[in-house]
Image 1: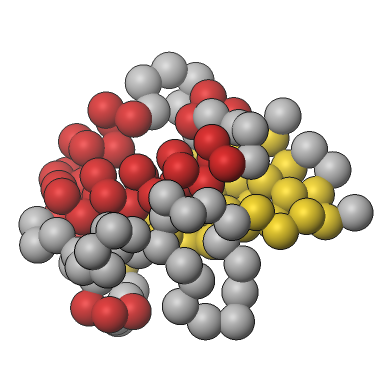
Image 2 (image 1 turned 90 degrees about the horizontal axis):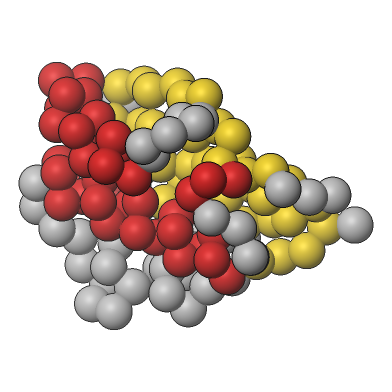
Length: 124
């Protein structure tokens, strides 16, 4: 059985998808843009945007009763791979032990002109 997860502390979906779906002890979190859910705006730097995307992921994890320790896999999409080191520095502050598997790609463009988008899969 699948359950839709929606947190008021993360931005609403900007299309026909859910923030997250939980099924059989696994939480699939849609890519999180660095949108501040209170203002609807994005910060400017890659560091600030990475922090906001991770904050949004954290809000969804919490809403579903999971934590960052439950994250098994992330995918990071970057507007510019040259931002990898800066993104990675912020990312490493969130995932400090038993780090999840990860893929990171440069993409042609991200929605709304974002510099980063992060999706995750968490397992209980």
